[in-house]
Length: 233
Image 1 (tube, rainbow, N blue to C red):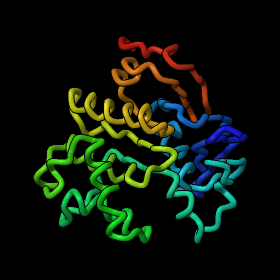
Image 2 (cartoon, helix red, strand yellow):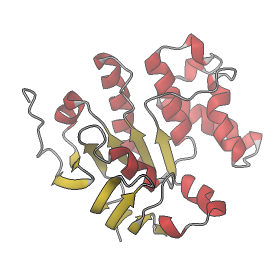
Image 3 (tube, rainbow, N blue to C red):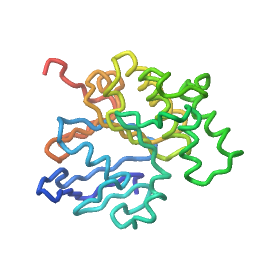
């Protein structure tokens, strides 16, 4: 079995909207996959099903061998430990330092202080923020805040990093820096990366596998380097 698998997956919301309609997909461990498509095409719903924010109405979603739909609410934390999540909005706790924001994840998992410090320092070093360890979020640029979010997402060494428009609030140069960090995590740690994005430049430049979604259906699945977005469209 691939690390992530979707088998004939549907998601129909209570208001009757079908966000995902018969989706089939396999993602191997260590893959880097862009998920693209127009607004309201089903990208975010697909991503939310991976970390059990949403449950499929029909079909099977497997992450690391776990049948997501069958997972009891009390056991969702076991799935979440395998998944790091980075959003467009930084969602940092404003009254905590950079170190404390990242350490908070491990504290919630019950790690001892002696275990937490080296993991936090390692994660912040990996994203290039070791010197900002005592800073507060309001003292950081947008790109630095997003790096903290990435450090927080990888501090527990998850098997997969799910990114939902992580560069949406950033300028082009800062977006390139963030993508370089994410690409390095994929290559150095072997972390599976799944990233929803509207950024054509990123997709064209990085030449990764691309899954294209429209109206809740996968309309294209392009191998690494074989897809180029038409910039004139």
